[in-house]
Amino acid sequence: MTTTTTQTDVKKDRDVPREETANLIASDKVEETAVYGADRKKIGRIENLMIDKFTGQVAYAVLSFGGFFGAGSEHYPIPWAMLKYDEELGGYITPVTKDQ
Picture 1: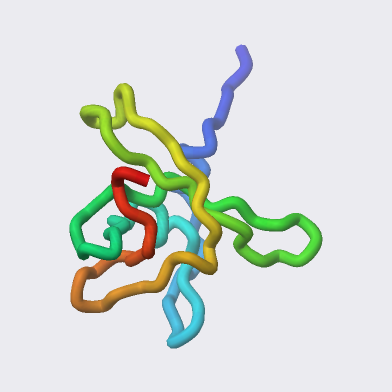
Picture 2 (picture 1 turned 180 degrees about the vertical axis):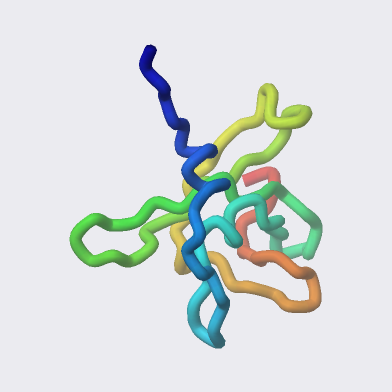
């Protein structure tokens, strides 16, 4: 009998410290974080991050919006440089609006 391990199972079982610093945060803490438009209204959430294999830099975030509990949601890539963390909102803010 073979056993398969999903990426979700791996995430749950890892014992790697993911302490935040002033400049660093673990990617799994960024995923699911709300994203707000220029009008400070929620437009979606970060689904995942896309990282350049060669530079190690985050190239863009995949923004998920719409749908119901993930079903029927749409995805939109947004350059990482267009997102700024807003402590007051507890999420990322971008000049992109929901209509765009």
